[in-house]
Amino acid sequence: MKVTETNLPGVLLIEPQVFGDERGFFTETYRYERYAEHGITHRFVQDSLSRSKKGTLRGLHLQWPKSQAKLVYVLDGEVFDVAVDVRVGSPTFGKWTGHTLSAANHHQLYIPEGFAHGFQVTSETALFAYKCTHAYAPECEVAIAWNDDALGIAWPNRAPELSDKDKHAQRLRDIDPSQLPS
Image 1 (tube, rainbow, N blue to C red):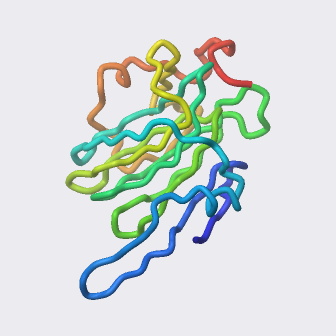
Image 2: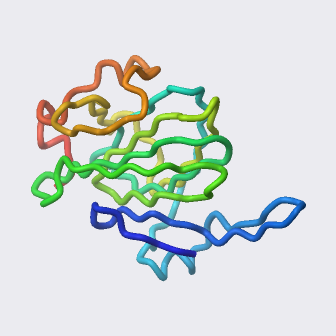
């Protein structure tokens, strides 16, 4: 397993070892001991899946105060996956990192607590998997505008399919800092 720190400290790009032949492939998507060697020692308590069509953008989302660290990857298709540092006082506050995750490359992204997360589907459809350290708590959810000009995220499609929640999300600068981690 190859683990690379991104431009945001704590956000890790993970390339699991894949064993393949003419029949297909095998890979471990998670094993506590291997991830712990790289500082990922959280107890994951919820796994979730989403299927989305091309152009769908989900995010940018986080929970506060019931913050979630996430390990995300794609089971089918391809997405452009983004993490944004929203920790008030962080030297990288408002900075983002983006990576292509796909069923073909098997890459994963580890996103620690204190980061907003979103992704946009770049294939016809995508089946997206999340491992989370806290259960979903809708009363703690914060949505940040995907197209916040201050963030400057280079999404592949500038006319995405959005949920109503994401259509009405606030810019990061308009969110009360008490609603964000520090």
